[in-house]
Length: 209
Image 1 (tube, rainbow, N blue to C red):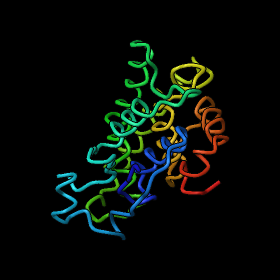
Image 2: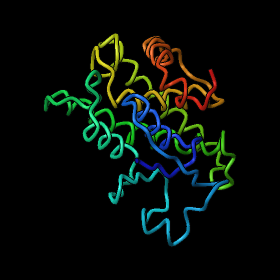
Image 3: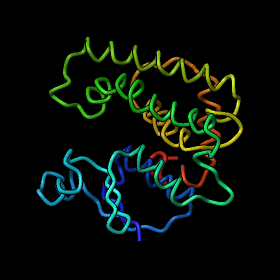
Image 4: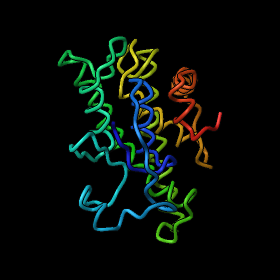
């Protein structure tokens, strides 16, 4: 039995939960993180020295880093009707390109704005820095919009992949953050398409329609 350690409200945990839903995998989940069991214990750090969620336990195999966990699940537990991580080297590279872009470029752009506007963290109280973060975030979303306008489907083409899970959650965060946003028609159509998937409805936006 797979075990997922991490609280359901975490965007990175939800990547893994949505992936499990798409692959129709059974798992147990334990709520870890702020407000739940502490990740700062020696026992948890023995699993992930970064003290972050999620952590995947597959028997005696331990794995952390959310995008890597999603790749592992899609490879280890391939679904006959759903190739979330393609076998073709080029198609696989495109999926992983967008997953890496989400975790590095896109995430880095929104971090300050999100911590300032949503988490209200005292460490992110600089309004000018927050404004710069919002501008950078919207610029990255323009990149996503242009890419989606070309495919007119999912991010790498006609088929839904792991890249759409991680990007879909990022789009949700962009839409839910109280700030000014440009109108991005391809992103809007993409988000509507993702919203029809049962996995998104369960984990994409914390149960908010």
